[in-house]
Length: 395
Image 1: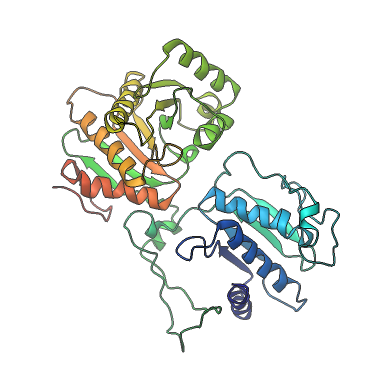
Image 2 (image 1 turned 90 degrees about the horizontal axis):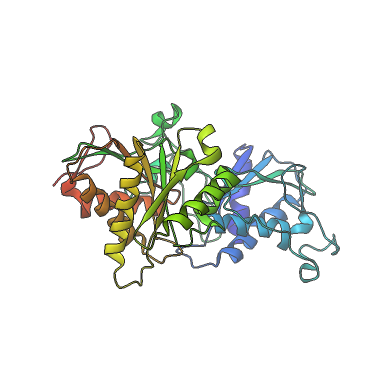
Protein backbone atom coordinates (compact mmCIF):
# COMPACT_ATOMS: atom_id res chain seq x y z
CA UNK A 1 0.00 0.00 0.00
CA UNK A 2 2.82 2.42 0.91
CA UNK A 3 4.59 1.59 -2.33
CA UNK A 4 1.44 2.17 -4.36
CA UNK A 5 0.65 5.55 -2.76
CA UNK A 6 4.21 6.79 -3.14
CA UNK A 7 4.34 5.57 -6.73
CA UNK A 8 1.21 7.63 -7.44
CA UNK A 9 2.70 10.73 -5.76
CA UNK A 10 5.99 10.30 -7.66
CA UNK A 11 4.15 9.99 -10.96
CA UNK A 12 1.93 13.02 -10.31
CA UNK A 13 4.93 15.07 -9.20
CA UNK A 14 6.95 14.16 -12.27
CA UNK A 15 3.99 15.20 -14.37
CA UNK A 16 4.17 18.65 -12.80
CA UNK A 17 0.93 18.44 -10.82
CA UNK A 18 0.68 20.97 -8.00
CA UNK A 19 -2.27 19.36 -6.20
CA UNK A 20 -3.37 15.76 -5.69
CA UNK A 21 -6.60 14.23 -4.35
CA UNK A 22 -6.24 10.83 -2.67
CA UNK A 23 -9.30 8.69 -1.99
CA UNK A 24 -9.54 6.35 1.00
CA UNK A 25 -8.18 3.39 -0.93
CA UNK A 26 -8.83 -0.17 0.12
CA UNK A 27 -11.86 0.33 2.40
CA UNK A 28 -14.27 -1.44 0.12
CA UNK A 29 -13.70 -4.32 -2.29
CA UNK A 30 -10.16 -4.74 -0.94
CA UNK A 31 -11.54 -5.36 2.57
CA UNK A 32 -9.29 -2.95 4.49
CA UNK A 33 -10.85 -1.60 7.71
CA UNK A 34 -11.29 2.17 7.19
CA UNK A 35 -8.86 3.18 9.94
CA UNK A 36 -6.14 0.80 8.74
CA UNK A 37 -6.54 2.12 5.21
CA UNK A 38 -6.43 5.75 6.40
CA UNK A 39 -3.33 5.09 8.52
CA UNK A 40 -1.59 3.46 5.57
CA UNK A 41 -2.43 6.29 3.16
CA UNK A 42 -1.44 9.07 5.59
CA UNK A 43 1.70 7.18 6.65
CA UNK A 44 2.78 6.75 3.03
CA UNK A 45 2.06 10.41 2.32
CA UNK A 46 4.00 11.60 5.37
CA UNK A 47 7.02 9.42 4.55
CA UNK A 48 6.99 10.72 0.98
CA UNK A 49 6.88 14.34 2.19
CA UNK A 50 9.84 13.72 4.52
CA UNK A 51 12.13 12.83 1.66
CA UNK A 52 13.12 16.48 1.42
CA UNK A 53 13.44 16.46 -2.35
CA UNK A 54 12.25 19.36 -4.46
CA UNK A 55 8.70 18.78 -5.59
CA UNK A 56 5.91 20.46 -7.54
CA UNK A 57 3.05 19.22 -5.32
CA UNK A 58 2.03 21.85 -2.75
CA UNK A 59 -1.40 20.58 -1.71
CA UNK A 60 -2.91 17.15 -1.05
CA UNK A 61 -6.62 16.48 -0.46
CA UNK A 62 -7.66 13.32 1.38
CA UNK A 63 -11.31 12.64 0.61
CA UNK A 64 -14.27 10.33 0.72
CA UNK A 65 -18.06 10.62 0.44
CA UNK A 66 -18.51 8.71 3.73
CA UNK A 67 -18.24 10.81 6.92
CA UNK A 68 -16.88 7.88 8.93
CA UNK A 69 -14.08 7.33 6.43
CA UNK A 70 -13.19 11.01 6.43
CA UNK A 71 -13.05 10.87 10.22
CA UNK A 72 -10.63 7.96 9.84
CA UNK A 73 -8.42 10.26 7.74
CA UNK A 74 -8.69 12.99 10.40
CA UNK A 75 -7.75 10.51 13.13
CA UNK A 76 -4.77 9.31 11.09
CA UNK A 77 -3.52 12.91 10.73
CA UNK A 78 -4.29 14.16 14.26
CA UNK A 79 -3.56 10.98 16.23
CA UNK A 80 -1.71 8.08 14.60
CA UNK A 81 0.64 10.35 12.60
CA UNK A 82 0.17 13.49 14.69
CA UNK A 83 3.93 14.12 15.06
CA UNK A 84 4.14 14.80 11.34
CA UNK A 85 1.36 17.39 11.04
CA UNK A 86 0.41 20.66 12.69
CA UNK A 87 -3.10 22.08 12.33
CA UNK A 88 -3.30 25.36 10.45
CA UNK A 89 -4.74 28.07 12.69
CA UNK A 90 -8.50 28.36 12.41
CA UNK A 91 -9.15 24.79 11.26
CA UNK A 92 -10.64 23.86 14.64
CA UNK A 93 -8.60 20.67 14.98
CA UNK A 94 -5.61 19.62 17.00
CA UNK A 95 -2.36 18.33 15.62
CA UNK A 96 1.33 18.24 16.28
CA UNK A 97 3.30 15.92 18.54
CA UNK A 98 1.76 15.67 22.00
CA UNK A 99 4.62 14.66 24.27
CA UNK A 100 6.00 11.84 22.15
CA UNK A 101 9.38 11.69 20.46
CA UNK A 102 9.28 14.07 17.45
CA UNK A 103 12.08 12.12 15.84
CA UNK A 104 10.09 8.95 15.76
CA UNK A 105 7.15 8.76 13.37
CA UNK A 106 4.05 7.69 15.26
CA UNK A 107 6.08 7.28 18.44
CA UNK A 108 4.28 7.36 21.76
CA UNK A 109 0.84 7.07 20.21
CA UNK A 110 -0.53 5.11 23.15
CA UNK A 111 0.73 7.71 25.64
CA UNK A 112 -1.16 10.69 24.26
CA UNK A 113 -4.90 11.27 24.21
CA UNK A 114 -6.26 11.33 20.66
CA UNK A 115 -7.45 14.66 19.31
CA UNK A 116 -11.25 14.96 19.37
CA UNK A 117 -13.09 14.30 16.13
CA UNK A 118 -16.10 16.30 14.96
CA UNK A 119 -19.20 15.02 16.80
CA UNK A 120 -21.61 16.07 14.03
CA UNK A 121 -21.49 15.01 10.38
CA UNK A 122 -18.97 17.02 8.43
CA UNK A 123 -20.52 19.44 5.93
CA UNK A 124 -19.85 19.21 2.22
CA UNK A 125 -16.31 20.32 1.37
CA UNK A 126 -15.58 20.94 5.04
CA UNK A 127 -12.02 22.21 5.37
CA UNK A 128 -10.03 20.22 7.89
CA UNK A 129 -6.66 21.71 7.18
CA UNK A 130 -3.21 20.92 8.51
CA UNK A 131 0.39 21.62 7.54
CA UNK A 132 2.99 18.88 7.21
CA UNK A 133 5.65 19.77 9.76
CA UNK A 134 8.60 19.08 7.49
CA UNK A 135 7.43 19.33 3.90
CA UNK A 136 5.13 22.33 4.50
CA UNK A 137 2.49 21.00 2.15
CA UNK A 138 -1.12 21.82 3.00
CA UNK A 139 -3.19 18.73 3.86
CA UNK A 140 -6.96 19.01 3.52
CA UNK A 141 -9.55 16.38 4.53
CA UNK A 142 -12.84 17.10 2.75
CA UNK A 143 -16.10 15.40 1.91
CA UNK A 144 -16.42 16.00 -1.82
CA UNK A 145 -19.46 15.58 -4.06
CA UNK A 146 -19.36 12.42 -6.18
CA UNK A 147 -18.58 12.40 -9.87
CA UNK A 148 -21.94 13.05 -11.56
CA UNK A 149 -21.48 10.23 -14.06
CA UNK A 150 -21.37 7.75 -11.18
CA UNK A 151 -24.35 9.24 -9.39
CA UNK A 152 -27.35 7.56 -10.89
CA UNK A 153 -26.77 5.50 -14.01
CA UNK A 154 -24.96 2.60 -12.37
CA UNK A 155 -21.71 3.26 -14.23
CA UNK A 156 -18.24 4.19 -13.12
CA UNK A 157 -16.93 7.58 -14.30
CA UNK A 158 -15.43 7.24 -17.78
CA UNK A 159 -11.79 8.31 -17.86
CA UNK A 160 -9.88 7.89 -21.10
CA UNK A 161 -6.52 9.02 -22.35
CA UNK A 162 -3.27 8.00 -23.96
CA UNK A 163 -2.63 4.25 -23.99
CA UNK A 164 -0.30 2.91 -21.33
CA UNK A 165 2.96 1.31 -22.36
CA UNK A 166 2.49 -1.41 -19.77
CA UNK A 167 0.07 -2.49 -17.07
CA UNK A 168 1.39 -1.38 -13.67
CA UNK A 169 2.10 -4.06 -11.11
CA UNK A 170 0.51 -4.24 -7.67
CA UNK A 171 1.95 -1.48 -5.49
CA UNK A 172 2.54 0.92 -8.37
CA UNK A 173 0.54 3.62 -10.10
CA UNK A 174 0.12 4.91 -13.61
CA UNK A 175 -0.59 8.42 -14.81
CA UNK A 176 -2.46 9.60 -17.88
CA UNK A 177 -4.35 12.61 -19.15
CA UNK A 178 -8.09 12.41 -18.64
CA UNK A 179 -10.30 13.24 -21.58
CA UNK A 180 -13.59 15.06 -21.06
CA UNK A 181 -16.38 12.79 -19.83
CA UNK A 182 -20.04 13.17 -20.88
CA UNK A 183 -20.89 15.53 -18.01
CA UNK A 184 -17.95 17.91 -18.42
CA UNK A 185 -19.90 20.69 -20.12
CA UNK A 186 -22.68 20.52 -17.55
CA UNK A 187 -20.19 20.61 -14.70
CA UNK A 188 -18.39 23.56 -16.20
CA UNK A 189 -21.62 25.50 -16.29
CA UNK A 190 -22.29 24.67 -12.64
CA UNK A 191 -25.16 22.27 -13.41
CA UNK A 192 -25.77 19.57 -10.84
CA UNK A 193 -26.59 16.04 -11.93
CA UNK A 194 -30.36 15.66 -11.46
CA UNK A 195 -32.17 12.87 -13.33
CA UNK A 196 -35.72 14.16 -13.76
CA UNK A 197 -38.95 12.24 -14.16
CA UNK A 198 -42.64 13.02 -14.39
CA UNK A 199 -45.22 10.99 -12.51
CA UNK A 200 -47.44 9.55 -15.22
CA UNK A 201 -50.75 10.29 -13.48
CA UNK A 202 -50.20 13.45 -11.40
CA UNK A 203 -47.60 15.08 -13.70
CA UNK A 204 -45.58 16.01 -10.58
CA UNK A 205 -41.88 16.38 -11.33
CA UNK A 206 -39.61 13.95 -9.45
CA UNK A 207 -35.87 14.58 -9.28
CA UNK A 208 -33.10 12.34 -7.96
CA UNK A 209 -30.08 14.18 -6.66
CA UNK A 210 -26.71 13.52 -5.04
CA UNK A 211 -26.40 16.25 -2.45
CA UNK A 212 -26.60 17.18 1.21
CA UNK A 213 -29.91 18.08 2.84
CA UNK A 214 -28.96 21.69 3.42
CA UNK A 215 -28.06 22.17 -0.25
CA UNK A 216 -31.56 21.33 -1.50
CA UNK A 217 -33.72 23.86 -3.30
CA UNK A 218 -37.00 22.78 -1.68
CA UNK A 219 -39.57 24.32 0.66
CA UNK A 220 -39.95 21.25 2.90
CA UNK A 221 -37.21 18.83 3.95
CA UNK A 222 -38.29 15.31 5.07
CA UNK A 223 -36.01 12.97 7.01
CA UNK A 224 -36.45 9.75 9.01
CA UNK A 225 -36.32 9.68 12.80
CA UNK A 226 -37.52 7.69 15.81
CA UNK A 227 -40.62 8.39 17.90
CA UNK A 228 -38.53 10.41 20.36
CA UNK A 229 -37.51 12.74 17.52
CA UNK A 230 -33.89 12.54 18.65
CA UNK A 231 -31.48 15.13 17.24
CA UNK A 232 -28.21 13.85 18.70
CA UNK A 233 -26.49 13.03 15.44
CA UNK A 234 -26.80 12.00 11.82
CA UNK A 235 -28.98 14.00 9.46
CA UNK A 236 -31.29 15.04 12.31
CA UNK A 237 -28.33 16.50 14.20
CA UNK A 238 -27.00 18.30 11.13
CA UNK A 239 -30.38 19.90 10.47
CA UNK A 240 -30.79 20.88 14.13
CA UNK A 241 -27.32 22.38 14.24
CA UNK A 242 -28.04 24.57 11.22
CA UNK A 243 -31.65 25.43 12.19
CA UNK A 244 -30.87 26.52 15.74
CA UNK A 245 -32.34 26.26 19.22
CA UNK A 246 -35.71 27.76 18.28
CA UNK A 247 -36.25 24.94 15.79
CA UNK A 248 -35.29 22.32 18.39
CA UNK A 249 -37.68 23.80 20.96
CA UNK A 250 -40.54 23.94 18.44
CA UNK A 251 -39.96 20.33 17.37
CA UNK A 252 -40.00 19.05 20.94
CA UNK A 253 -43.16 21.05 21.73
CA UNK A 254 -45.02 19.77 18.66
CA UNK A 255 -43.88 16.20 19.37
CA UNK A 256 -45.15 16.39 22.97
CA UNK A 257 -48.50 17.79 21.82
CA UNK A 258 -49.08 15.44 18.88
CA UNK A 259 -47.45 12.31 20.39
CA UNK A 260 -47.15 10.64 16.97
CA UNK A 261 -46.26 6.97 16.77
CA UNK A 262 -44.28 5.03 14.19
CA UNK A 263 -45.79 5.54 10.75
CA UNK A 264 -46.63 9.19 11.31
CA UNK A 265 -44.89 12.52 10.75
CA UNK A 266 -44.96 16.02 12.19
CA UNK A 267 -44.03 19.18 10.30
CA UNK A 268 -42.42 22.19 11.96
CA UNK A 269 -40.82 25.41 10.85
CA UNK A 270 -37.19 25.35 9.74
CA UNK A 271 -35.73 27.87 12.19
CA UNK A 272 -32.61 29.58 10.92
CA UNK A 273 -32.73 27.59 7.65
CA UNK A 274 -35.54 29.85 6.42
CA UNK A 275 -33.13 32.78 6.18
CA UNK A 276 -30.51 30.71 4.31
CA UNK A 277 -32.64 29.49 1.41
CA UNK A 278 -36.01 28.11 0.41
CA UNK A 279 -36.41 25.53 3.20
CA UNK A 280 -39.29 26.83 5.32
CA UNK A 281 -40.53 23.58 6.87
CA UNK A 282 -39.10 20.26 8.10
CA UNK A 283 -41.01 16.97 8.15
CA UNK A 284 -39.90 14.68 10.99
CA UNK A 285 -40.91 11.20 9.85
CA UNK A 286 -41.14 8.42 12.47
CA UNK A 287 -40.10 5.27 10.61
CA UNK A 288 -39.84 1.59 11.66
CA UNK A 289 -36.79 -0.58 12.09
CA UNK A 290 -36.25 -3.03 9.24
CA UNK A 291 -36.94 -5.91 11.62
CA UNK A 292 -40.44 -4.65 12.46
CA UNK A 293 -43.09 -7.17 11.38
CA UNK A 294 -45.17 -4.40 9.79
CA UNK A 295 -42.26 -2.40 8.38
CA UNK A 296 -43.47 -1.82 4.82
CA UNK A 297 -46.95 -0.66 5.80
CA UNK A 298 -45.53 1.67 8.47
CA UNK A 299 -42.91 3.13 6.12
CA UNK A 300 -45.55 3.89 3.48
CA UNK A 301 -47.79 5.43 6.13
CA UNK A 302 -44.93 7.58 7.47
CA UNK A 303 -43.93 8.92 4.03
CA UNK A 304 -47.50 9.70 3.06
CA UNK A 305 -48.13 11.39 6.42
CA UNK A 306 -45.15 13.66 5.72
CA UNK A 307 -46.43 14.47 2.22
CA UNK A 308 -49.92 15.19 3.54
CA UNK A 309 -48.56 17.52 6.23
CA UNK A 310 -46.25 19.36 3.83
CA UNK A 311 -49.05 19.76 1.31
CA UNK A 312 -51.46 21.15 3.94
CA UNK A 313 -48.75 23.63 4.93
CA UNK A 314 -48.74 24.93 1.35
CA UNK A 315 -45.28 23.66 0.38
CA UNK A 316 -44.74 23.43 -3.37
CA UNK A 317 -41.58 21.30 -3.26
CA UNK A 318 -40.38 18.55 -0.93
CA UNK A 319 -37.00 16.88 -0.49
CA UNK A 320 -37.11 13.28 0.78
CA UNK A 321 -33.97 11.64 2.15
CA UNK A 322 -33.34 7.90 1.75
CA UNK A 323 -34.91 7.06 5.11
CA UNK A 324 -34.06 3.90 7.01
CA UNK A 325 -30.78 2.93 5.31
CA UNK A 326 -28.64 3.55 8.39
CA UNK A 327 -29.54 3.23 12.05
CA UNK A 328 -32.89 1.67 11.12
CA UNK A 329 -31.05 -1.15 9.29
CA UNK A 330 -33.00 -1.06 6.02
CA UNK A 331 -31.00 -2.27 3.00
CA UNK A 332 -30.69 0.75 0.68
CA UNK A 333 -32.73 -0.79 -2.14
CA UNK A 334 -35.56 -1.86 0.17
CA UNK A 335 -35.67 1.63 1.66
CA UNK A 336 -35.65 3.26 -1.78
CA UNK A 337 -38.42 0.97 -3.06
CA UNK A 338 -40.55 1.77 -0.01
CA UNK A 339 -40.06 5.54 -0.31
CA UNK A 340 -40.72 5.64 -4.06
CA UNK A 341 -43.69 3.26 -3.74
CA UNK A 342 -45.23 5.42 -1.02
CA UNK A 343 -44.66 8.56 -3.09
CA UNK A 344 -46.19 7.04 -6.22
CA UNK A 345 -49.24 5.77 -4.37
CA UNK A 346 -49.72 9.22 -2.80
CA UNK A 347 -49.46 10.91 -6.21
CA UNK A 348 -52.04 8.51 -7.69
CA UNK A 349 -54.73 9.67 -5.29
CA UNK A 350 -55.78 12.31 -7.80
CA UNK A 351 -56.62 14.94 -5.20
CA UNK A 352 -55.78 18.60 -5.67
CA UNK A 353 -52.38 19.39 -4.15
CA UNK A 354 -49.89 22.20 -3.80
CA UNK A 355 -46.78 20.01 -4.20
CA UNK A 356 -45.48 20.14 -7.79
CA UNK A 357 -41.93 18.86 -7.33
CA UNK A 358 -40.30 16.15 -5.19
CA UNK A 359 -36.55 15.61 -4.87
CA UNK A 360 -35.24 12.23 -3.69
CA UNK A 361 -31.72 12.72 -2.38
CA UNK A 362 -28.74 11.39 -0.47
CA UNK A 363 -25.04 12.21 -0.12
CA UNK A 364 -24.13 8.58 -0.84
CA UNK A 365 -23.86 7.66 -4.54
CA UNK A 366 -24.92 4.05 -3.93
CA UNK A 367 -28.08 5.14 -2.13
CA UNK A 368 -28.97 7.56 -4.91
CA UNK A 369 -28.50 4.72 -7.38
CA UNK A 370 -31.01 2.75 -5.30
CA UNK A 371 -33.49 5.63 -5.75
CA UNK A 372 -32.90 5.65 -9.51
CA UNK A 373 -33.41 1.88 -9.71
CA UNK A 374 -36.66 2.21 -7.74
CA UNK A 375 -37.95 4.83 -10.19
CA UNK A 376 -36.71 3.29 -13.44
CA UNK A 377 -37.17 -0.39 -12.61
CA UNK A 378 -39.25 -1.38 -9.58
CA UNK A 379 -41.85 1.37 -10.10
CA UNK A 380 -41.06 2.16 -13.74
CA UNK A 381 -44.71 2.06 -14.87
CA UNK A 382 -45.43 5.13 -12.73
CA UNK A 383 -42.69 7.43 -14.04
CA UNK A 384 -41.48 8.72 -17.39
CA UNK A 385 -38.04 10.29 -17.79
CA UNK A 386 -38.14 13.94 -18.75
CA UNK A 387 -36.40 14.50 -22.09
CA UNK A 388 -32.70 15.25 -21.67
CA UNK A 389 -32.29 13.44 -18.36
CA UNK A 390 -30.42 10.59 -20.06
CA UNK A 391 -32.37 7.87 -18.25
CA UNK A 392 -35.12 5.49 -19.15
CA UNK A 393 -38.52 5.15 -17.55
CA UNK A 394 -42.07 4.25 -18.35
CA UNK A 395 -43.70 0.86 -18.43
